[in-house]
Image 1 (cartoon, rainbow, N blue to C red):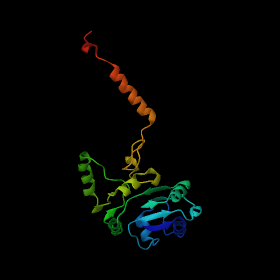
Image 2 (image 1 turned 90 degrees about the vertical axis):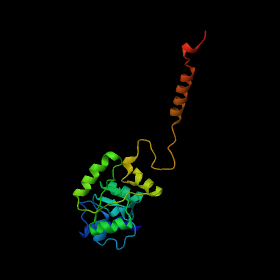
Image 3 (image 1 turned 60 degrees about the vertical axis):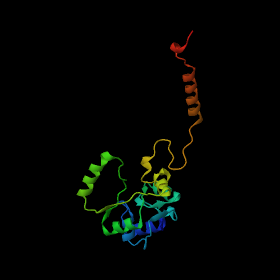
Image 4 (image 1 turned 180 degrees about the vertical axis):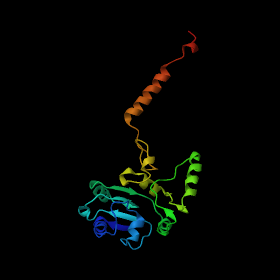
Length: 191
């Protein structure tokens, strides 16, 4: 994972190499020469966060908590998106679209997704994460992951650990079950 600090990004914006009015993506960062080689994504770090002067909209592989705070404190928006080495190459060649929306799940969406894909000139779509660690990272709203909309209210981004059930909810369920047990059907009684 290549690292990018906020102070270096601000220098590139000041020099006019990156346009802060548009969304800054991996493609713009690499094509501007801000980062030379990219292995499997770019991580935004918070060094020089006091130098950031304008709001930016950035879509990047990963981001540190201090970088997220600095971008959002200036009124900007940050989104973390999963990339592979191959998908970055395809984005740079113009064979893939840099999308922040994951594929919809379900049979009812297949026809509409295929129809949209056939109208576009791009050959490939960006892959979604498959490893548990990556899925958990991009589901986490604290990391501003693009899959965070999949979490239900009170649900944890972790696929392994469940959120503990509140004690009151458990006690209420037990109380209701006991009430049901106490109710005896009068027709079954002999006298």
